[in-house]
Image 1 (cartoon, rainbow, N blue to C red):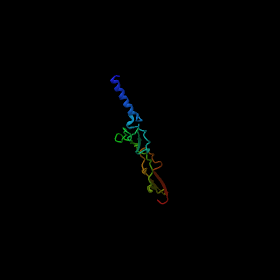
Image 2 (image 1 turned 120 degrees about the horizontal axis):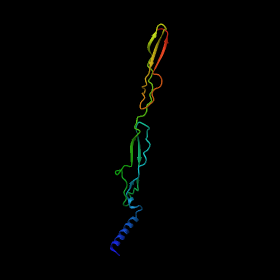
Image 3 (image 1 turned 135 degrees about the horizontal axis):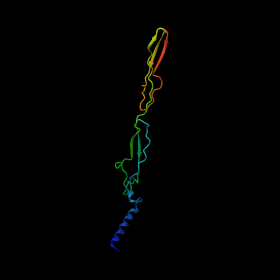
Image 4 (image 1 turned 180 degrees about the horizontal axis):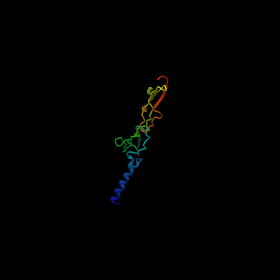
Length: 146
């Protein structure tokens, strides 16, 4: 028999004996990371939240002969990122009415006018929120002594 052929058969036999005692192909002696999962839903609809995703160590065999696991130093197991960072809409709301104030009167018809106001500042509308609805000013006519 040729010496080269004998050497090849001997090497193949030794490799076969080594692999026979290990249940996985040699490439799986080392743990490796799975693909990333999909990003989770954002935890808030606006104003800045977080999303996360994860992956897992596959064929993690650090307790078996020749096996090595995945480590966080190699790459993280989970990731987080900011989401929905746009501001939240705030609808406007009226402040309270001011006190009634004198506007003007008519001595001939014996009445005077009073007025009161309010502002859309409690809170003011922002980030696409609805404005206040209704009047910002009221007027009334008071009859009697001028």
